[in-house]
Length: 387
Image (cartoon, rainbow, N blue to C red; front, side):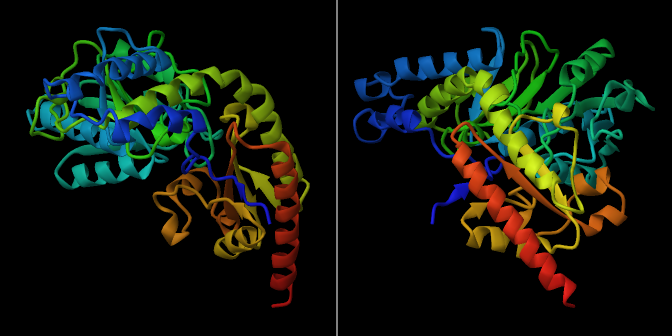
C-alpha cells in the first residue's frame, strides 16, 4: 500500500537537494564557526550564502536583522517576552493585542504573560475568518498597546490575514507589529520591503527544510531583550553555537520555496481544489474558509456525524495521513480555538479534518486520497447509523 502524506502544515519532508547541501557539514566541515582556526573559518562562506538566501527569501534589507534560532516557537516567545520586558514591565505600555485563532506558541505564551499582569486583547475574526483592519480598529487604544501579534496564515484553515494592511495600521499609530509567518512562507509571497512588519517568525521544516531551525526577523533600529543568554552569537541577540548544517539547509530550502511559488498557485492549487471539490460532493460536509482567501495547499473539512479520532485512524489504515488540526495541540483531538471562533455551536458537532498538500504531492496521490475519504465517510456513517 502506498502511503500518502497530506499533513504538510504540521511538517514537510526534507527536499533531497537540501539534504545533499547539508551533508558536508556533518563529517568534513564540522568546525565551530566561532573558532579562529581553519576548521571554524572554512564554514563562513557557506553560512553567508545561506543568510543571503534567507534575507532575499523574505525581502529583508541589509540593515534589518534575522536571528537564527531553533524554530518559530522560540521566535514567538522571544518577541512576546521581549516586549513584556522592554515595554510592559517598564511601564511604557500595558497591552498586547492578538487574535483568538493564533498558534499555541503565541496563545499559550500570552496566557503565561496574562498571569503576570499583561493585558491581553484577543480579537475574534470576522465572518470570513479573517482579522482585518476593521476588526483591529474596533476599540483599538494605541497609547496602551505595546504590540499587535497576528499570524499571516492560519495553520488550521489556511486563511490569509491582510498582514500588509494590519501592519500599516499599526505603523500609522506608533504600535509595533509581529506576525507568525510559519504557514505563509513558501506558499504565498512574503516581501518585508513592502510591508510594515516589525517582527516576523518562521520555521524551516514548514518549507522542506530541516527541523530544529528557524528565524526571527527584526526591523532595522528595533531593540529586543534576548530570550537566551550566554554568548555573543547573532550579535548578542541569541546565544548558542549556530547549527551550520541546518542553517545551510534552511537557506537553500528558503530559496527553493520562493522559486516554487508559481507552482503553488497553479499545479498545487489545482490539486487542492480537486480534493476539495470531491469532499464537497459528500453530504453534510463543508469547508472552513473561502478558497480564494486561503493558502493554495490547505483544506479544513468538516464532516457531520463522524468522530474525529476514528476518521483519522481509518484514513491512516488506508495509507492517508491527515490531521484534526495543529500538530502542537493534536494529542487531545479536541475542538480547538480556531473552530470555536469560526463556527456555530451546532457545527462543533462536526469533525474537522485538515488536509495540507506540498509541492511534492502528486495527482495520483490525490485521486487515491479521494477514494480513501469517500470510503471512510461511507463506512463510519454506516456504523453510526446502526446505533
